[in-house]
Length: 226
Image 1: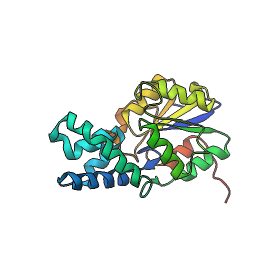
Image 2: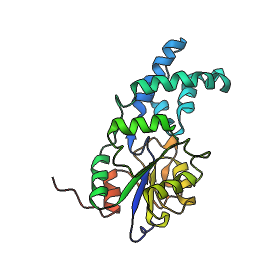
Image 3: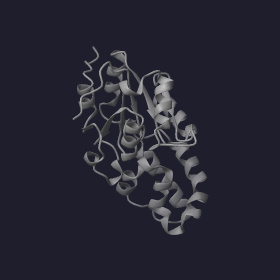
Image 4: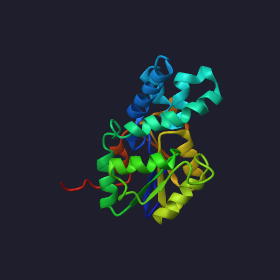
């Protein structure tokens, strides 16, 4: 495990699969659309695995045989269905709320860099109650490029007023590690997320952790007094 940068200023996170377990709501929306289209819904497990790849990957679990043009046609309805149920079953992963509280208590800034569309990201962050806490929220359509391009990560550093070399990027997908590393951040791959069927220990991250409490320990963050 690579040593942390000195004088750490902040921590950036991927959203789905890193901070939030949003798969139940994404799956619920897919089930409704399957019923509308008259096709059987796929099992939950393979849908959960691909959530980090976005809505198209979720739709492919049920409608891949129809081809990509049909998937594009189904997308607006799926996003509408998802927005209707967003945050009903979505929850922060066990230990995330305490981790964020420790980060804030330590005087560090934290933010979000996701490939999710901004109209969904902003509403989800608001419903979860983090809108006034995250110092940066960069979505998949904030810039013309998205992760694994480093530009969204660098923009988040700018918005949060942290130096990339003094910041950590945390994610559950290889693209998170690629984007963070290319932007010059210390990268952490997490084993509690969706992982896209991959092994986070093979992504070249500076650290690989299996629980948010391990990240708190790595960052040397003391518990927040009750």
